Length: 465
Image (cartoon, rainbow, N blue to C red):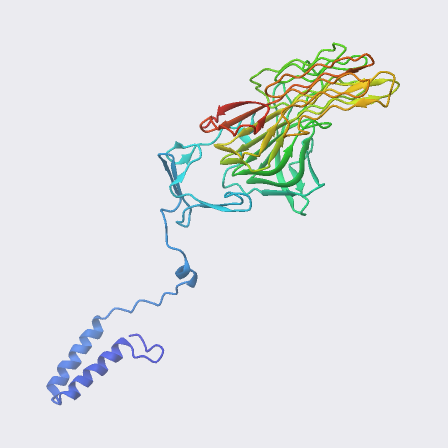
């Protein structure tokens, strides 16, 4: 028999009280009726079950969202993917800037459109990133940094691809610091790659983020890569992945040199010093451009090599610049004047299921023009023009000065590099060749807006597995 709780009668007490009340109200006072009632109550009490014990309920369970799906399951069909986590909720991913710069997006894995379609009944297809980057590609669930780099006028963020260690620290002009895991990938017959692994990448601002070092630079992102600023490995000393020796480097003479080769052979100097040889049109390696012929350690610098690989999307916003342009030839004086050839443009490789390029964005890899100098006048020189010095121009023009020769024009997607031309009293270096780009997407037909790609380019279909 249970006792009373919180001032209430137990089940048995209530039954006895009710039985007595009924007999009293009906005025039944006979011993027979009382006996019957007491016998009935006694039988009822003898047969009763113990009341179930009180169960305490955690208030958090009352507030928990309802189940949405069968816990710990995943299905993929007709390019649509559904994933349920261990709590019975659809898996969700918060993607910074997934809806545009500064606009976050939540991806819900419920009837989600796989970027590359289904690969099996339980997963979306994975991209096979080029140049050995596939093995380093992060997954959506990996706990990596969302890197958002903001630059301001006069600021430069330098990425050194020769860095050692398992992480690279990136700090921007706004005081943000990001620690990014890195992996080194070896290419047979080409430079190594330094691969930066992250959840997402955003670049914004009006200054440069520049990659230098002997290794080419690759970024592997689980989600979007959004560029609304400038990322470059253009023709500066030691541009990431640039080539300074070999058959594609211009030949140096006694006063001038040829330009670097890439898509085309480099322009020869005014003294007929040959430009560097062209590289294979379908370059199997991630490798930069080639320098002009070096004289006393000086030359037009090669454009470098950059690869951007994303599982979801690459978006080059209005005004964005990705540059692998070649540097202009260098004119300088020691006991005499010298005019070197321009560096060639490098290699930009963009791969994602979707690649979006805004009308005013630019991917540029034009060659630098050769320098010019005057004989016997050590202060009369003209420096070559960098391939990305004026993105509104349709050419990288030749240069000259009073009494100088002419440095050859830099190569563009429509014009091969120019050769240097003598004057009666001076000489010039050859122009550097234009570089190349590959844009690899799910359909293989990104059709970028006219004028956005200032280099030779190829469209490919992104491999998947």
